[in-house]
Length: 249
Image: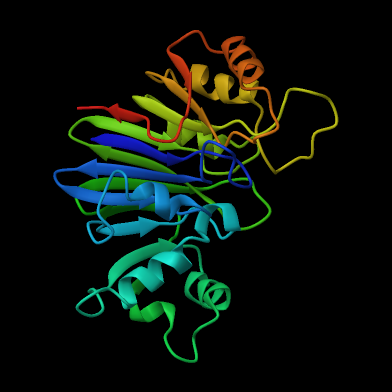
């Protein structure tokens, strides 16, 4: 299993990264976790436009899903004709929400490019990947993921405030890709995002092999985020970066 970070900027694209998007590859199968604004351009440095086999959207905030609109255009109007539809897994109402964002449903709709599948908590198989889903703590329906293949496991928090569901997804994972949107300070809103310190606590509690901080809001001090996470987790710790590849084989 191989993870390529396409975009890791939190809430909106930053100067050095698109918003959230992660390419997971196993046995030749290519899955995108999220496809936030700006991600489709950077994705093409790592995979062909038509080499993606499936897309999973954790939730329907723009920084995690909006470039599905651009990808729809690329698939419908491809040279030589529209490309075959691929599955897009997402929360209930994903097709309608993305059609609204796309704004061209009077001519073509999202279902011309994608087969939409509604996610629910539990386990399922997506290509060669065993996928466990759990509902996170966020203002809209949001799923965290645990991806397993060939004895390896990656947990992805998506966007979340503190929740026991993340602890379960992370338990024993080789890699925890965890959001760290907030600086550690008083008065933070509940049920929205995690601090880097809290990400470190989940990594320690789950005895994960390594922690990668992501959803890095551009105005935050990244070195401070590392220090805060390190105060709670003493294992291998790093920041996500667009273009970074982690090989878990």
